[in-house]
Length: 288
Ligand code: SF4
Image (cartoon, rainbow, N blue to C red; front, side, top):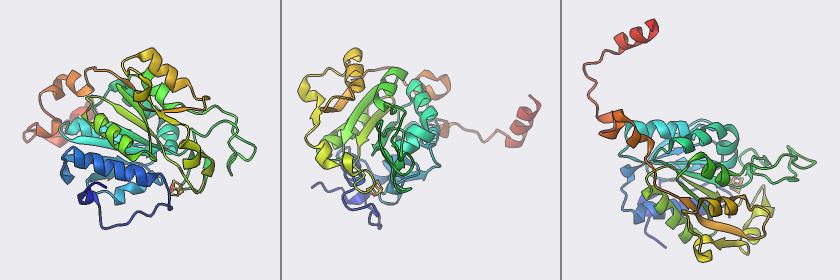
C-alpha cells in the first residue's frame, strides 16, 4: 500500500463494490505520489458517467465537463497553461461514442495531455446499455437481440491518427497501471491509456474471472513500442484469447504547443493582456 492519502477528498467513492474504477482511482493517486506531485500540480478533466464521479474522490484541480467533451476542455487548459500536468478521463461511451470526433482530432494534434479511458464496454451509470466498445452479439437492454456493428478499436485508431503514446492497462493490475500512468504523464505528447475496467454490475461477463487468465504484458513478450507495424498488429488482434497490456506504441514527435510560435516560449496564461480592450476586440471580430 502506498501513502497516497493526500489525494483523497472527504468523500468515499460511491461506485459498486468491486468496480474497476477503484483500481484506476488507486493507480492515479499512486502515480501522482510517485511523481512527487502536490495537489495543485495536476488538473484533471472528467466526463459524464461512473468514471466522471471520480471528480469527487480525488483532490487535484478538476473540471467536470459535459458529455463527450473532456478532450476539448483538457486541450484548452493545456494551451492556456502548458506548464500544468493535464489528465483527462472518460468512459468508453463518453469518450468513444459522444466524444469520438474529439478523440481523433486530439490524437492528430499531439497535445501534451494524458487521456485515460475507463473501458468497461457498457454504459454503466445509465444501468447497462450497449456502448461503442461492446463486442458484436452483446445483448443488453438497448440491443436485446445482440449488437450488429463491430466495436470501436481505440488503440488502433490512436496509433493510426498520430497519438505518440498508446497503451492498454487493466484495473486488476494496479502496480502495472500505476507505472503506465507515470510513463504517460512523463511522455511529451498525447498519451492514451485504454483501461480494461470491469463493470461488475452491468457487464459481469467482462470482469476479473474473464480478464485475469487472459492478460499478458507486452514488455514480457519482447515487444518494441517503436515498431509501428507490430503495435498495430497487437492492437488489431482482438479475437485472440490472449489480451496484451502495456505500451503498444511510443514515439517522439513535436507537440502542438512546441509547434506553435505563440505558445512555444510561454503559455497563454503568462501573456500580458492588460492593454487589450475586450470590447474593441469583440467589435473588431464583429466587423471582420
Ligand atoms: Fe462501476 Fe458498473 Fe457500478 Fe458503474 S455501474 S460503479 S461502472 S460497477
